[in-house]
Image (cartoon, rainbow, N blue to C red; front, side):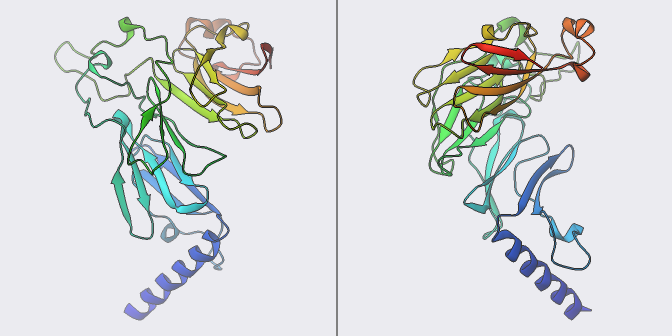
Length: 280
């Protein structure tokens, strides 16, 4: 029995190695389960099994992103701004959080930086050593999370009335999911290095074209943009550095009842280019 288990383990490791050499892996986080990484296919007759998947740090709530040139290295997030760097060669996940503060039990108004429950993580398409992590400001690291620098000011509305302690009257409910006025989406243009888009959960779309030296709020360029809608996804064009495709989640706003039939589940889609916006 021991020999059979060892043989299965050796086959699994060889299977993963061959697939990993092609960078054919995927990363996921699941509520109440944590993070996993595994191959997108298997070379064994049984196909993908539970044995192909393994933890890669982080937690249940965060984004999970592999280093493009070395998928053994995985950045994984969790609520309250936690982010880890996992290396599959050592099987170790190291806490590389931007700011060492545990905000549990506090309202967002008490914190130096506000991280969304699902704070976004993005790797630059131009430099695999550049990683971005969003709070209310945008952070950047070039050394695997050993050091971070803020490359923006506050990119949200920073409405203090929406950052108070929540819950009660007896028991509070402040675990991070309640935090508002945070960056919800990050994307760097694959066409032009340093052109970075961010979207906030309180309805702002911002862009920098010089790596964070200056930022422009382009929210007003989207006619019909639901005020306070969450900028859920940003997909920069692969052909034009000035173009990005944006999805806004408005299901928590009063506009939900007035969205037309094409806006499924309160999602509003925009294509924004040089101030000219088309609503799809």
